[in-house]
Length: 95
Image (cartoon, rainbow, N blue to C red; front, side):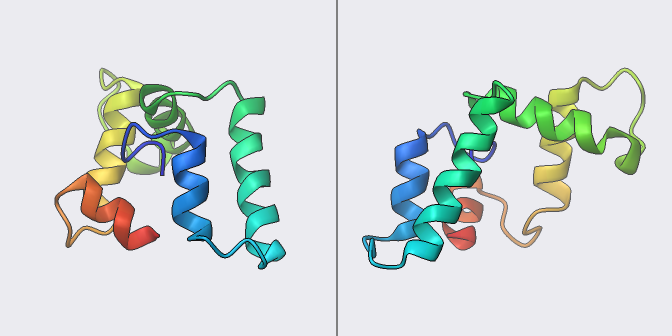
C-alpha cells in the first residue's frame, strides 16, 4: 500500500478497517502488518518501493543498472492490478 501512494500508517489502517473496529481479526492483522514495516525501517514510499525491488529483483530479471526503486516501480506497474494505470486506483482496489 505504501509503495503505491505516499500515505501514513494511519491512513492505511483506516482504509483497511473502514471504521469497523469491532472486527478484531482485521484490526489486529493490519496493525501487525504496519508494525512489521517499522521493524525493517520502512517509513516512506521510496523506502517501501526500494524494499519491494530488492526482494523481487531476481524474479523480474531486469538489467543490473536498474535501481531497487526502478525494480519496485516496474513490479507495481507491470504486475499489480495491471488493468489499472493510476496508482490511486490500484490503492483503492486493494482496499
